[in-house]
Length: 613
Ligand SMILES: Nc1ncnc2c1ncn2[C@@H]1O[C@H](COP(=O)(O)OP(=O)(O)OP(=O)(O)O)[C@@H](O)[C@H]1O
Image 1 (cartoon, protein in one colour):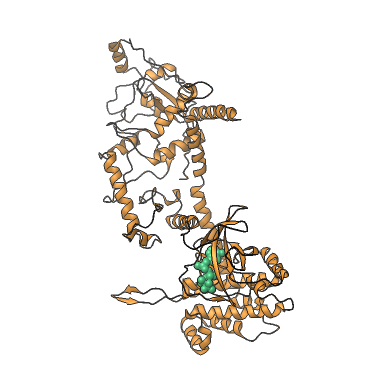
Image 2 (cartoon, helix red, strand yellow; image 1 turned 60 degrees about the vertical axis):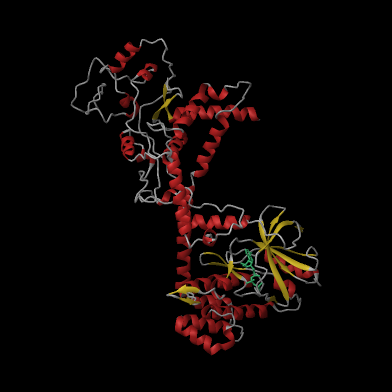
């Protein structure tokens, strides 16, 4: 929605007072006056040119500067518009200003607006072109087509995480899913995609937002309030087989903090009795570790809210995050492939593996430099929070659970490297326990990955030593791969910035629409019930009609988002381009520039803002 119109160079303009044609006007006289070929063509006044000039238009067309046509001395072009100009013959377009954008499922190119508003409304001649494509359908038929269109798009989208929902005949969901494609699908070929954030990112973000807002299912007997957190929801299905976290069972919840209203992931360790308060010291150190590949630790506390002694550590929450285990190792349900059920899962591509290893190595380096050890480099605790973006989760918990003031951190750091090695084997072999049969694991690894992967994995699981450290690991990853990762990151930032640009102007347009909402049809203001119908506000009202309430020559509504966006952008820019506003009774009209309307809106809104203080 980010297009912005460039103002057309025009002569200075000013609002022209509305003139109500006197009811007792001599109609015949008026007709004669209107039909006079001496009168200047209204198209020239409004648009600067008339496309019917050489096709029989009977009104006067002043010569274009530099043309060979001699000037007509008896009918000079007025330097500026006079109030009488509103009596000029009314321009009646052959077709409505803007055709309805009908995304018909059957048509190959249902809606083909010009790529930018500046070319979209360059002159009135284009309006007639749109007229050629005007649909004769009633609004009801159009709505029906639109509904069909959306149904077709969404129901066909098997790749969408909502796909199962749409296919299901059951009506167990009360909440309506968001229609991600509501206003931009199907994308017409001629419509530059830069006008909207791309479908993939929009859907991804909507999915995350929807997950964040999912209401927890009842029946888990969760506490209403927990040390400043409320609205707890389980983040893992309660029926899966339970693995122990060291010697304890753990559960992850999503919860909202009463302090800042932000969502957090709470990891609860069941039946844990804290023996040393000093164990929480590590949590404080962890809460200061900031790294893009580490899930930030917020705080830790013990609680009896679950009817036991639980330890709870609060982390940053990443909606729809999956663990590396869930994403790459867990056996997927069989799918039909080539006519039979198959449980085949593709090997992790080597490029992705290097990206993962680079991110993990970088995170471990920061942790080791902070005098800590990760203690949990495990596929079930590393989360994928975006495309190829991983973060080590559950940091700090092991420090509390295994608290031992005499423990040597250097030993724990060496263990981090060994765990990292086991993780590489698990990812290469799609098996958490790959290391248990090392020869087989090496064989699988050798067949699918380069010798560098194998060398690094073997180094990581090699015996601890004074020279074995994370810096060595990063050296083994190599400058080329690090540079490659850096380039990928920059490209990703560039892409996201471009996406951001395409949505940049939305806030501006919403603010404008809000101003309209505040001003238009306000029942009572300053004890003047007609406040919104008089003075500047009347112009705003007519402008609102011009933007939103256009009708075609049959009186059918014209629903054209491009027209609305172009008008609002020009209004916000305050361009000199002029438009004709027509009163609702069609008895009077007004030629104003966007600049004039903008001034009216600013003044009216200023009135309201002052009165609200
Ligand atoms: N900080 C977080 N933000 C978002 N989701 C999280 C966060 N931490 C954990 N999760 C999610 O919670 C779910 C359970 O996490 P958990 O670590 O218990 O995984 P698990 O595979 O069930 O491991 P285990 O079997 O050891 O409990 C996972 O789907 C994980 O993605």
